[in-house]
Length: 182
Image (cartoon, rainbow, N blue to C red; front, side, top):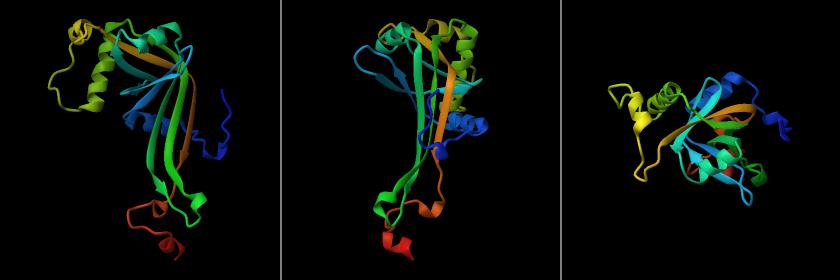
């Protein structure tokens, strides 16, 4: 979709990307607005090669999503600062994934309930003793009266980038450039 300028950092393995997305806790949904981009941090799950998240069925996020379903969902994890005696070579160890695709609200209550259960399993594993009832997903209203919407993003393109470095390059409090020169 878009060429990566630093192609030597491109992560191409689908299994590595999938493992990363399954473990990451926060993603950023980029939506199109007429005057400014609108980016929202969200909890999410990566399942069946799609991103799923939930939120109120009303509000700016839903209004923008319904007006233009083309979105970008970005996930990034910082693995630490990398040191080098040359200041300009100080860097960051990280991995990031950008998913470009189309988002839509799930209408199937069975699929929505399964997604919500999988989100609970990811964020609070073992907390609930019984599975999430379909009726809860169907009838729940927020304190402002909004229904819960479960959204699915089907990717058109996925790009991933990472800077993975040896443990000895990572910064820790007390580490000095002089020690790196030895």
